[in-house]
Image (cartoon, rainbow, N blue to C red):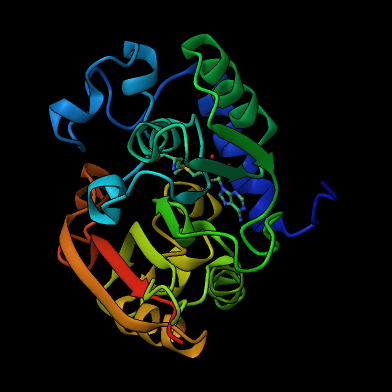
Amino acid sequence: MTQTTNPIHESVREHYADYARSGSSCCGGSNLLYPDELLTNLPGDVANFSLGCGDPITVAALQPGETVLDLGSGGGLDCFLAAKRVGESGHVIGVDMTPEMLERARTAAVRMGITNVEFREGYLEKLPVKDASVDAVISNCVINLSPDKPQVFREVFRVLRSPDPASGRPGGRVAVSDIVTDGPLPEELQKNMEAWGACVAGALDVKEYTTGLADAGFTDVKVQPKGDASELIEAAGLKGKIFSATITARKPA
Ligand SMILES: C[S@@+](CC[C@H](N)C(=O)[O-])C[C@H]1O[C@@H](n2cnc3c(N)ncnc32)[C@H](O)[C@@H]1O
C-alpha cells in the first residue's frame, strides 16, 4: 500500500498501532457492546479487544453466503463475528491502514482456524476492493477518523452490489456504528490530533452524515443516535453534543 502523507492518517495510524501493540482496548475487562451470545466461543483476548462504539453485526442482519466488508477492521472482532454469520459459503474482508492491527487480526484468524475471512491493507478513501462485489459494508467507530468522508461514502457506494431485478435481490447495504455530533464542535477541538485519534474531533454532524450518504447515491439513509459516546466526552464537557449512532443505508437501482 502506498502510504499517504495526510497528517490525520499518520497521527491516527500511530494512535492505533499503539493499541495493537499493547492489546489494551476501550472496553477494559469485558466487552459490553454486543449481546453475550455473539461473543461466546471466542478467546477472551479477541472478544475483549474492541475499539468500537456499537454492534454493527446485529444491525447488518447478515445472511449465509453473503460477502461482507468491514471498514477499519482493527483487531478483527467484527470480521470474526460476521464470518460466523455468513458461514463457509460467505466471505468477509477487513480493510485497515495500520499494519500492527492487520498483524493482530491475521494472527487471531489463524489461531482460531477461521478461513472465510481475509485482512487487506488499505485506506477507506481508496478501498482495495472490486466494484459491486459486496453485499454489506459494516464498520465500527472508524468513519469519523477519515479526513475525507465524502470520498469514503463514494468508495462504499462503488464496492456495494447493485440490485438484481431478475432475482429480486436488493442493492447492497450499509450497517455502521459511528460517533456523530449535534452541530459543529469547537474549532480548537476539531484541530486537536489527540481528539482525532480518540474518535471525537472528526465526528460528523448527524445532518451532514445523512446528506453525505445521500449525495454519494444512497437511499433509505438513517442516522439514529444510540447514546452518549464515552466518559471521555463527559470529561470534555461535551455531553449531549456527541453520540454514538447506528447508520444504515442502501444502494438503489
Ligand atoms: C477506533 S478503531 C476501531 C477498530 C475496530 N473497528 C473495532 O471496533 O475494534 C479504528 C481503526 O480504523 C483504522 N483506520 C482509521 N482510519 C482509517 C482510514 N482512513 N483507512 C483505513 N483504516 C483506518 C485504524 O487503523 C484502526 O484500526
